Structures are given as structure tokens and as C-alpha cells.
Length: 343
Image 1 (cartoon, rainbow, N blue to C red):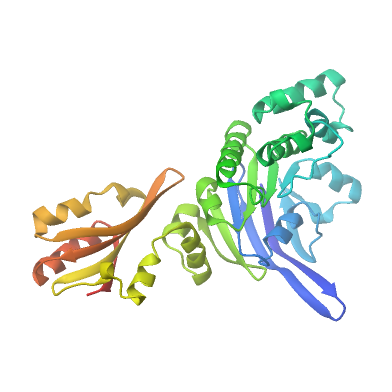
Image 2 (cartoon, rainbow, N blue to C red; image 1 turned 60 degrees about the vertical axis):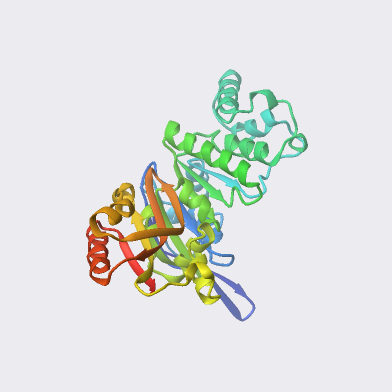
């Protein structure tokens, strides 16, 4: 659905140049929810605005549903943009118009009859759960309700792509969850391809099929969300993982020589990483019976990413050295990653 081929965007200010997007290539499949994540200044918002040419790339190709937008004259570009809906962090609603009128606004030049427009708006209000708010004004709505109106408005022209630029950043965690559930519903029921720009790893892991991590205008890592989350290759990616997990607290405790991390002779402090199919394995309980190894779980973190359980456990193993080596080989044989942190 979306092909970005060596897309770049350079801003010029006097004698200086800022490479906001630098040689980015991505392929986003039809019906996919794709996340683009990065810290502030990474270039992710500029990149998403290049997808619909709100920012015209300095170079490269932007191909949406087989059409290179860079080659189109202005009239054709406006037509193709109707296939692309967009929602923003601060909603961008028309304050002087009701919820109904805000959703109606993008339909003002459509060829639908008045009755057809009304039917469409009513169905969109129902989809986003705001039927009872159709006559309210934006000032009378909560942040979550405003974003629901913005989503309905973005869907009015039956787009094939929905771009979400920090769509949940202005919302509290509970409201964020409800908006993400709505986006999943839109994706499932309408089959719309969604591109989600965010700086929050927790948002990506809740909703995205695949993810790209950006730094200084470049994509530094890309892949299935579950794979990237469980096996991050780049330091930047690992930094993002830290924001969505408490597991790296163990290294702070080690540095502080916390009593939880102190091991005796015959003990090892280990970090176990489960991903996908092996997350249901009863590895820990098997150690005591088969290998005479005691396992004390200090703490852990388990997430469900796209229906796959992924987790890390910090465990103190204790027992005889030969039993310990056999137990470690058993754990590794179950495709559970094991890192000896101490001991």
C-alpha cells in the first residue's frame, strides 16, 4: 500500500541545512498497522507528512496504492490525497462547528447527496461511539472524545490509509488505551492501512504489526514488533524497550549492590528471555525436579504483543555446579535465552 523509496527531506535555514529525513525506504503492506517511533527530533513527524506530501520530499519516491505522488500535478495530487486520512496530536477540530459538522466538513465537495452524507456521518458517529454527541461543540468534549471526532472526520472520504501523528500523546493512559482499541477496530472492520507515529514504545507494542525506529532522520531498525521488542539490535531500540519495561532495573540494583542481587557460592543470577512459542514453557518448575536446582524469581516482565507472550525473568539459581551446568543447557535447549548476570 505504501512504498517509500530513498525519501529525503532537507530544510534550509540561511547557510545551514537540516536533514530531517535522510534516505528512508519502507514498504508498508495493505491492511497493516505500522509504527514509526523515535525520540523528539528523530524526523518521524516529517516522514509521515512526506507520505501525503504535506511536506514535499527533497528526493525519492512516495508511492501510495501504486501511484507515485511525486509525479502528479496539483489537481491529481488533491484527488489522491482523499485516499489518505490524517489525525493529529491536538485534534485540529473546527471550534465553531458541532461534532456532526466537523465530520461533514471533508464531504463538502463530494458527489454524495445530502441524504447519503447524513447516512455516512451517522454511521461514522456510531463507529467511534459518539452518536449522543453529534450536536456538541469541541469545547464540550473531553480529549478522548475530540480524538474520536478527528478519527471519524479522517474516515469520511473512505481513505485507504490513515496517518496518525502522535495521536495519543495529549491523552491520559486510560484514554490512550480506548483510542488504540478504536484504531484496531477501524483496521479490522474497514481494512484501512494505519501508520502510527509515536515516541511511546507502550503504544507500539499494543497495536502495531511492524515497527521502524528512527534516529537523526534515518531508520536504524525495522521488523515485526514482537521480534524487535524481544531481540532489539540497536542501542536506541534497547533504550526504547527500557521505557516500556522495568526489567533493566536489575542493572541499577547490581550497581547499588542491592541485597536482591547478592549471590552466594553455588548461585547464579540469570536473565531469561522468553519470546513467542516458548513463553508458555514450564522451564522454572522443571528445574527443581529434574536437575535439583532451586530457582528464586526476583522479578519479571511479561507482555502480550500481537497475541504472542514475550517476557523476561530475573532468577537466582542455586545448586551444585554440575547440576547447574546441566540445568543451563536444558534452559537453552528450550530456546530460552539465558544471560548470566552475576555468579
